[in-house]
Image (cartoon, rainbow, N blue to C red; front, side, top):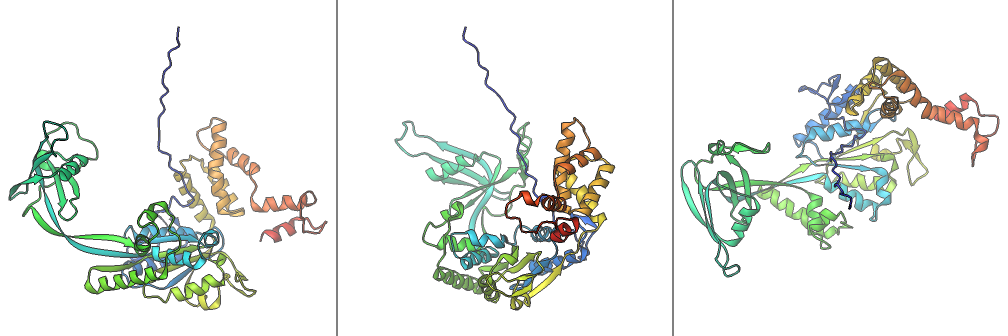
Length: 467
């Protein structure tokens, strides 16, 4: 007898990836720009957060553009976290572009072109236009289908009403198709753009809320519009200058926005766009929204890039440039000169410098608490004390890495809460930088390209190398 096969069913759950900064919701400041101790995922760094808050306020009011800010501090002191907090605080309207200094050297375009594209991604244009809109509640839709398929096109009538008037409109084949696509039915409140014929469903009318017993959770109820059916409305579109550049560059047009294959954009195209945007600004049709461009690992840029940034910041339409580095006095890439943070002195002179301080033991404890919540790990108090001590002795990043590893070790022994033994187990399994360096010093003769002379493999040498 043939075996009956039962089709397999699986639950599909959406996987949310947890990133290094996914717990950051903003800068954690109050209305007077004072930093709260723990807020919106941010801990400590009060002076740096206050300074970043002032910059955000000035960006929102449009009072600052073409300025540059440097976030300088040792590794693991929250520079990228502050930049992420700034991005979240600015909201959806203000453009925020992010770039790593090393990215520029692996692209198929020149470094200056990549920087220019990043600059223009961080400048928004708010374009206003007036349009004729028909807005009302659908009373009835009548569609007459021909008796013989294909003999004639469909025709129909649409009855719309507001609180004051009711009108019947004749429908053509295109409008019937659009209504079908949007699944419009009587009782819906819709808006029809007269120029493009686009139909937008605003929601269901309150007067029809009792018609159905079962409603989906996404059903939105709105009031029946009042006044005339036909209105003039101002529509605001927000785009970045880079998007306008891509659409106007001849290669692929707007499709390049989706494929990501923009290539180099000619200077003439940009000049024409700048002229057009300047005209719109004079006519009051558009306004410029200067955003923020964040460049991490800015010491990785070379002297050409720094010269370009110097010039680009003087442009009329320049965003705020926020750069971050963890380097001390080091060589400027592309030269033999040493400079603070690996940044040329003339460019450093333009920067407002925000310094980040090392985290205290209490700060590290609070950050580890937040990360445990974010990674959905339950940990006992003793384990948190031990993990904090490890974080202070090694680094905050190493402490954060141990959270998920300890949770897996706990799961392995069928435990519910992470205990000290789980932390100790993963501490033995995974080395931090200091222990790894000591190990290398001990067994240096067994590795290739050993550069430390024999007999110098003591702990002091290892610590000196790490620091």
